[in-house]
Each structure stands twice: as C-alpha cells, then as structure tokens.
Image (tube, rainbow, N blue to C red):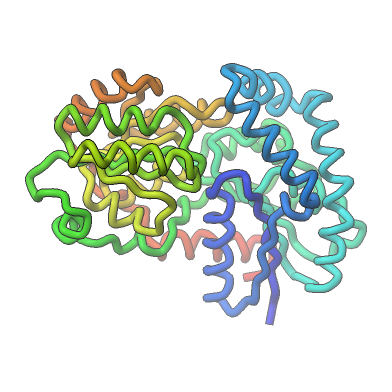
Length: 359
C-alpha cells in the first residue's frame, strides 16, 4: 500500500485544509497518509518565535508588504537567510520522518517545508508543492520539486517566473467535504435564529480574526441585517463579540466552529479577508465583500478574487464596511461555482499523480 507524507504549517488554517484535502483523496485511492506540522518540527521555542514574528509583521502597517514584495517575491538575501535558518532545523527532523515512514510521495503545502524536503539526502520519493496563492513567492519554487500544484493559470505563470521548465498542474481549489453539500438556506436560518426574509451577513476574517471585527459586527447589526460573526481561534475577539451580542439581538457571535458551511448557507453575503474562504463561499453561491487586511500575498489574492467577479472590496474601517455591505446586499448573488465538485478535484489530483508515475 503506497504511503504519502504531507507537510503543513500552523500559520493560519488554510494550509491544514489543503493537506486534509490531499490526504482524503489519497486514502480514497488506497494510500495511507501521515501529516506533520512544519512549525512544530522547528521546535517549541523556534516555532512559537516564528509565529510571533509573523503576527507582529502583520500588525505593523506596511511592514509585511515590504518584506513580501521586496524580499520574498524576488528571493532577496534576507528571505533566503530566513529560509536557510528554518531549513537547518527542518532537514534533520524531516529526514527522520521519511526514514520511518518511507513515503512514495511527499506533499508540501507550506513554503517553509519546500526547500527542506528538496535538501533531504536521500530522495526515493516524489515531491509535490501545493500552493493556493495566486502568486507563489520565491521560497515556494525550489529546484528538486517534481510537480507544482496551483489553482489558477496566473499562479502557474508565477511558478514559471522562477523555474521556466517547471512542471505545473492547475487544479480546482479543494473544499472541505461539507461545502460540497451545504444545508438548505431555510434550514440553516432556522438553526441560527435568522428570520427567512431578513438580510443576513456572515462576517469572519480567518482563524486569527484579523481587523476590527467586533466593532464592525456591532455597527453592521445596528444598521439592519442579521450578522453571523465568527472569531475563529481569537479568544479575545470571541469575548468581545459575545459581549456586543448581549446588547444587539441581530448579532450572533461564534468562536471557532465547524458550522461554517451552514453559516454561509444562512447568509446572503460573506464578508471576509482574502483566502480559501472565498472558494468556499463561491461554491455555495454567495457574494463576497473582501476586507483588505492581509498584507503581502493577501493583496494579490484579493485582486484575483475581484477579477473572478461577484465580489467587492472595503477597507477594514467599520463605517466603510457597513456602507459597502449594505450596498452589496442589494446586488445579485452568483450561482454556485460549477467546478466546485469533489469529482473535479479528485480527477485533477489523480491526473497529477499520473504525471509523476504514481497514478
């Protein structure tokens, strides 16, 4: 029975979702799988320090933009030094895992893992790199990768910027299984106490809850629509949302929840940051209002979502989000994405395996 090792990263939830999608499909094809967190492999102190630095960069306006566009994208010396420092810790740890698990396939869904996997001294496996960003930066694209998996032709061009001879496969974005069969709108609204004829907005901003979500949620609910506000893993944001909900009956507060498919089904509009949530909303057929809160790769992803249509953009200022959301509620909703089916993803991933002789 063939085995695959998937290397994810705990900066946000998107990497884990992609790793899970790959693992599910591989198991359906008769593989066994193992998933590991690259940040954990760095060690408790280094992993925590890396996450703290990343969060701090995002908190300082323009700083992560500068690092991303001036260092990560061109592969400047600063980015390469950071990559080398992480690689020095990851290579021994990944080497032990590969020796123990003896995989036929390793899938990196986290940029930090890419160069480490390609530097392992013994390579008797195939290596996929899977990135859902519209413009993968330099550290994603390393020599030694057998196949790059991306979700748009724009991303394929970005990969070939660094490796003109790269083998690239464009796949539909995989979704968590409940998004392929969400509940009906009426049933979802009944579950969350939203009247059938009321305007309803789902407000969320990744697992970290980036931006002034609590203030925005309260202001938007006061303006008329019901607001389903999700804090993700941000416990302080959850506390503030629940406090606001005690004074605003149209505000429904949630912490980390697996009911996102039902929440999207209940909503008329999804207000969120750019990321994999956008593909989930499009699969269900919901209009998007994108919050411009994610620097660096988030800027590129946001522009791509606008190009795809049925989306608007707002700054993170609560008053501007409210104004844009009320206007967006009056615009037509899209049909569910025709390509958002488990069959389309499975077919594409199967074709990728066949390209490297593992199908």
